[in-house]
Image (tube, one colour):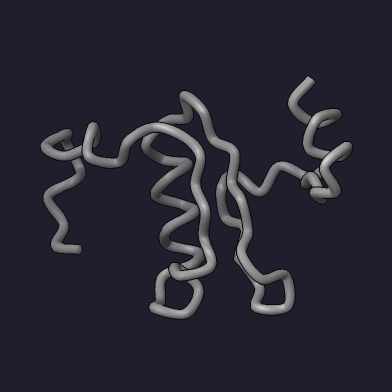
Length: 79
């Protein structure tokens, strides 16, 4: 249902599972990542793959609040 809706609005939908390691490319403008109820590791993979001022500025994440992960084991790294 979600794929059909996104396609009807002109969005490209990934067909391969990148396990969150997809890079937002400048040629695409902003990239929407639809990640409802995803685990912390997927968000971590996505942010790691796009770590940098230019690429982070192109991410639009529709999903869980990242503040809900604060204080969980493995989140003691400095941002």
